[in-house]
Image 1 (tube, rainbow, N blue to C red):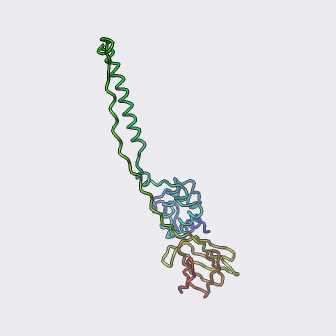
Image 2: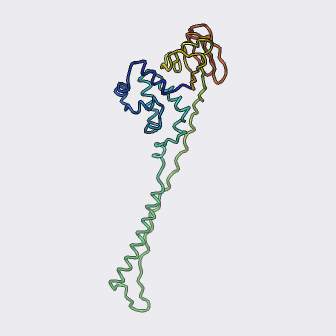
Image 3: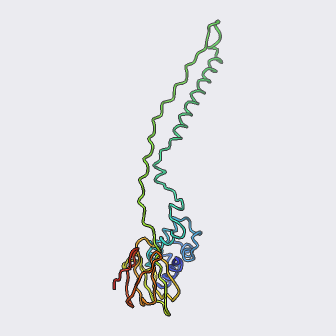
Length: 250
């Protein structure tokens, strides 16, 4: 897998920018930019902020923000796996328990009112005994208004499952390796790697669609997709590597 922090730092240095330049350009505080380059994501406010900052910083440096986020999620988990709250669902859920509590409180206060009314009548002498059949009577407390049934929320629609990511591995071979340019998804994607891949070194990209590569020496490069080797050839060549094939473009 590629290192998020090193990719961000190298892209910044290629552009001749320092942290303060990037802070002014992205409106992200310098300490968070440094945290992303050092991969100290625990210093960030929350996983939601991490994703937003990674996308903004990566695209400011002409990198593929989505590819960086995909790599972050492959290592630290997606929003649903981390238990991020579904605020919309919580707002939509009817609050039934407080309504029942209000009804119980109304009944309690009506009962207390009836007892106080009897005590007041006795204290004023209105209910004193006038004979063996004299009775002090009070009206029973009024029944609380019936609560209207609250309909159950409709079940959530079945989510559409996104395709699983596959690992595309680029490994330098031979005596010299290969000079590479790697872009996310296709030849128009953001640049994510530009440099020599020495023999024995490798780059790992976990993607949902594919990547574009421009290789200066295909003989010094080995490619696997989901663990299966993919043949490339032709010296200096460009390939679109997807989940199912490696298609030469030039």
